[in-house]
Structures are given as C-alpha cells and as structure tokens.
Image (tube, rainbow, N blue to C red; front, top):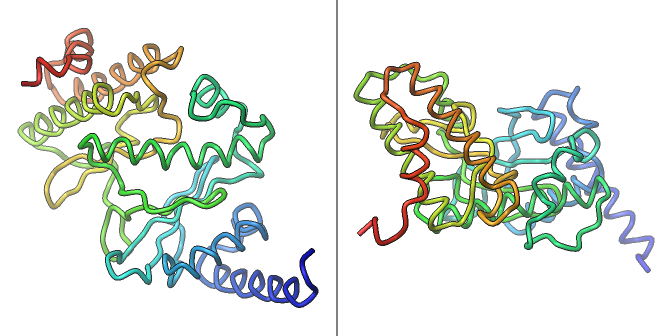
Length: 266
C-alpha cells in the first residue's frame, strides 16, 4: 500500500517533470509523449544520474520521439532519449517483428505490453550489434517505454541521415562497403537482420565519413521465420540507393557477402 505522503511526493515529481519538459519542447506533443508513467520513469532515470537536463525533440515519428539530453554521468555527456508512444504507436505492425522472437516468447499482446517489449528489444539489438563490431548508438539503459543511448552528433545537433549527405564517388563507395560489412557482421556475428535498413536509418558521421546504423527495434534474429524476406528487402533498399550513385551493385552478390561464414573472413 502506497502512503498518502508518497503519493503526494509522486504527484510533485510528475508536476516538476511536466513543467521541465513543457519548457523544453513543443507543447503539442506533450500529451502523447509524457504521460504520468513516462514522467515517473524519466524521474527514476534522472535520479540514477543519466539525465541532468532534457532538451527539445530532434526527431518525431508515429512510433517514437527522440529528445536530446545532457547526462550527469562522468563518462557520458550528450544522450538521446527515445520515448516510444504507447497511445499512438502502430503496435499491430510491431507484433509481426516480436512474435517468433524467442527472447520475447510469452509476452501479453496488449498495446502497452507490445510497446514495452519493443523498447527492450531495441536495447538488446543495439547491444548485440555493438558487440559484433557494428557502429550503432551505444545503448545505456532502458526503463518502461524509454531507451537512453549515445547521441550521434554534437551540441544537440544530430549527424545527418545518409539520404541528406552529398558524397563524392570515393566517399559513396567507402560508405557502401562499410554498410555491406555491417550487414555481414549483423547477420553472421550478431545473428540479426536489421529489417528496415535504408538511407533513412543510416546516419553519417561527417567527421570520419563512416555510417552509423540506427533504429533497430524491428530487427529480428536470423532464425526468425521472416528473416530472409527482411534481409532481401534491406539489400534491395541499399542496392537502390547506391545504384543511383553509380556504385556497381548486384543483389545476389550482396547477399552472398552478407551471409559468408567465419572461415571466409579469415
């Protein structure tokens, strides 16, 4: 039983975060994003030292909004706060990517349960990708419908999506080769297929001209019943984009490169 004093303190915390967030972001997204449970989760993450100041949104979508924040942690400066929208996210589409994943067998199929599982799924996928050597936003912690991860950018300005970067022929070939290698590492080492890879879900670190793979909530294990279909879709998207940049691409050769075994890596 929660005491009246504790309930009063929780109300104060929620009100405090509500005002802080309203001051930092556009008011018209507030109701959809910052319900009481999300504000309490943000408070807990702040209490653990992960969030010192929450800034404005730098990406909005049907499934989630991304906010820039400053961390209290000594080894972390800027972070990205990804908040999945329980009220508006398309959880029916999400179910196709969660059902069949043994890591999430037995979860309830309500909207809230699917979205909370999706948040954990992206965290786990990012960890697997990072451990396999793929450049992704480093995941820090997840709580409820909130994922905290590395902010790919500087001073609140995110690195651009691949679709928005003007590339020389040399740079385009370099990034194509790196993306293909990351797809291989995901498949052969992390045992994952991105399942939504395109020029929209790849950032470019303009300081190093290296790609950064993002948005891995839908990524599936390679033994998922739709893994091959999703892989071919990813390959088609990447081939289409780089083909327009006059990079010679062959989808069957790309799939062979992605699926090559560890012996061929030596």
